[in-house]
Length: 444
Image (cartoon, rainbow, N blue to C red; front, side, top):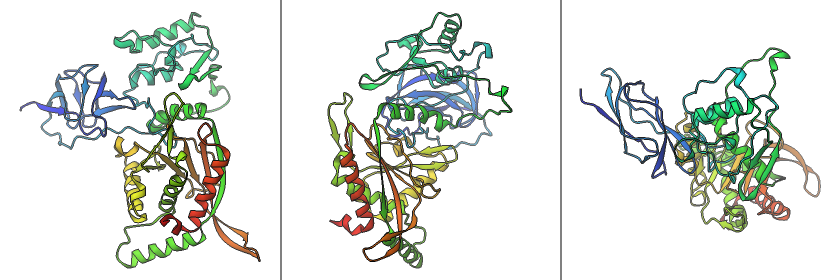
């Protein structure tokens, strides 16, 4: 039987990515969907899965090579009874509500063997100083996972491999140095634009001393989003503006529209309140363009965007991800609702492509279907604002003559105070509430 060529599948918008880790070698027997290599762009690391099962005969790439869609990875002696499947698309999970376009999103590879508990960093172990000037440590996802399991900050580890890449041995040697007392300086977290924070080491306790415990690994999405959330919260001066929008008429229109669609045989299209909010946000972003912007790398200029790509947080069994509705300004409510439904379904099935989660200029996180009155959403860097929606409730509102029951939608707008001041934040929510109260204003 001739050898089968295994190639790089669709990797979204990435034209060329670097091979940073080889997860198989000649002679290995692999299964369908087993990870073959890890590649890294400037925004994400991802694993390329196998489309067939069989025995690896020859690797056609090495660490440091640049590959793109269609590049030959390896030659495989495919198993005759293995069903050929379309080459799966690698999924780079974004951060939800945190940073879908984070510069150093991490993906976890096959678990690395952990050393004995005695080799783990003690709770008071301090880490050596470093001068990485905020740069991302050069390490593969499996090494990053290994370091997290040991409580090691990779920015303190000196890499011994090509281009300073950190290996498993480097992490182990660092732990030995700390245990021997060779490393005693406090931990320093460094961020962009000169941000530096001196932090105490993270406390490490044996919780089983206090009662029964169980261990539950974080999901892949949470492992990726956690560092981005932390960075965004620490480096962005958040302010959250709270308001309420009267959506009484809008909700009545939404319900009647869905009933009309059902009657006309288009019941597959369900108009949601979030679809209307997305359209209203586009109108508000046009009115206040600073909210549809980003700071440049030096924090000296505002990049105003002429497109309106709206991210929305989608709940999945493994955590929140943020698909993006592209060019929302050019789409009607029905089309937005259809795209949201399709993207949400793909998110739940883990089939979102990297391109589906990139390019957002503004994000909405809706918890209205669950409950709550207000919350502080974390901004998705490099965006400068994010809108949170909570559960709508009926409240008595004074109309000048009497109290009348009205349906009010809570709004929670977090914004970057370096770009947006309090007065502008309040004006944005007031305008947005005004549009939601009468969507005809989106036509103006």
